[in-house]
Amino acid sequence: MKMKSYYSIFIFAALFAAVACNSKSPNNKYNAMEQQFIDFVKKHNTVVEPLYKNLTTAYFDASISGADEDYNKAAVYELELTKVYTSAEDFAVLKKFVESGEIIDSLLKQELNVLYNAYLANQADPVMLEEMINLATSIEQKFSVFRAEVNGKKLSDNDIEDILSKSTMSTEVETAWKEAKKLGPVVADDIIQLVKMRNKLAQSLGFSNYHDMSLRLSDQNPEEISRIFDELDALTRSAFEDLKDEIDVYLSKKFNVSKDQLMPWHYQDRFFQEAPKMYEIDLDKYYAHCNIEKITIDYFASIGLDITDMIANSDLYEKEGKNQHAYCISIDKAGDVRVLCNIKPNSKWMNTMLHEFGHAVYDKYIDADLSFNLRDPAHTFTTEAIAMLFGRMASNAVWMRDMGIVDASEAAVIAETGMLSLRLEQLVFSRWAQVMYRFEKAMYENPDCDLNTLWWDLVEQYQLLQRPPKRNMPDWATKTHIASSPCYYHNYLLGELLASQLNYYISTNILKTEDYMHQSYFGNKQVGEYLIEKVFMPGARYHWNDMIEKATGEELTAKYYAMQFVEK
Ligand SMILES: [Zn+2]
Image 1: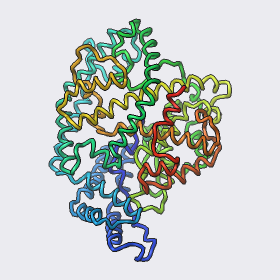
Image 2: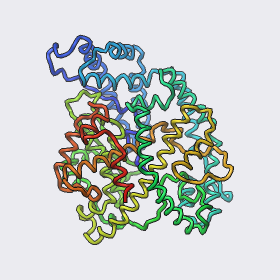
Image 3: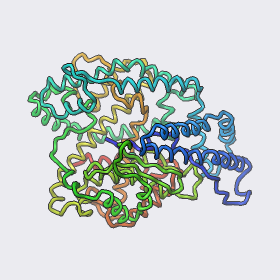
Image 4: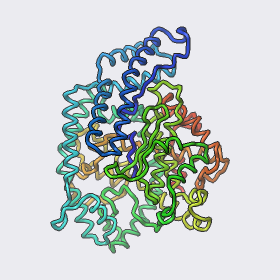
């Protein structure tokens, strides 16, 4: 559903970059401790900046060439860079700065926080870290070699998804679903062991468990995140109940069973994380003759964001051996921002180009005068939010009309169905994200609890699915993110919430319209100015929630997401 971006791959690596602190003042601006910290940062950055640039360059080259030697080069730089952050001496110095309470200047304080967290994450016992990496690798391997077997035929995940979404026979989808879930017992014990190791690591660094650590090290207070998820639950519950009923009516017709006979295998994917295709809408035909690259350039230019320099450095079309996905990467945190895509003239790639260049404009316009450790988005989810805000345009009828992709009458046809399917997608995804967030939180709090029951309790509570009778299997273990990208999933949803909050603010305060549902921002350069000044420029200078409050007048809230996708 979401394109994996570079940001989500290197959560901690994304904190790096360097250059001397701006010595903008004579010595008397800073106290002695602050001056020491500034010297520390200077030294740190001299080491880290070139390593970071080598790593990002090698990684970008490798994903284009696909050559082993390029990937190996990237791996070596990554290891070297990580090693910087394992230094116990440096960490002790940082700790001294923190404990002194004398780093008072707000920018220095924020930079110290960023550096301290980056080092803290790497202070664990190296033996423990290596054991964890080995176990995680072996789990990953089990995931990749597992094939569900149906009627003696080995099926890939794509094959399974194909059966689940296309078949109209209950027995067929039930078999496919149950066979796919046989992966659970293959990996569950290993995952529980990994969870316990992660907890041990977190506890060795002073956190109550790994979930707690992951959130806190990325400046998220677990209570605050839970509060937002509760708020969203309350706002979406009743609309989702209605929508779920519509889905059930549709599926019971499709499978010719009564609604109370509908089981998880009827919901068209393995987790009910994506919406069943209830509405007929084919956007691809409108994009079949479009120049996706040119539309992207023209659109961003129309709102005052120039991407031509980044387009020139990017690699946008298919090549042999090239990475088939898409991501954006800031090579040097000094303006060299590149995007990797594999453009085809269809709506998915229109969405992806707008998404990735959303990341790119964020990176490009981060204040170049900031110290390099703060030259990052406020949080990974804030850059996802910008990417989603623009990515959503690809299925927005008003945007398609403004960009000349469809005429007014076609736009009117798309508008209604487009809105309904976006709403369906968002509601289904948001209920699924609730399950993921709450399951991971509870699992790290107590890995010895009855996880099989916990999983189905949450699925029933939030997704309103019926648990298969007497089911007692580790179905939770078949979701790859639980092993491979722990405690990260909630950020996708936070990104969606912020995208809606920004859209509402832009519509109301810049476009001066109450119609926040049908805006493309096309041709309004003030939108770009606003984003540059309030969202991009600050980089990581403030805590993410302070940035959001300064930009929209409110801290992050689920309210606007609900207004956009819940209310009809
Ligand atoms: Zn992204």
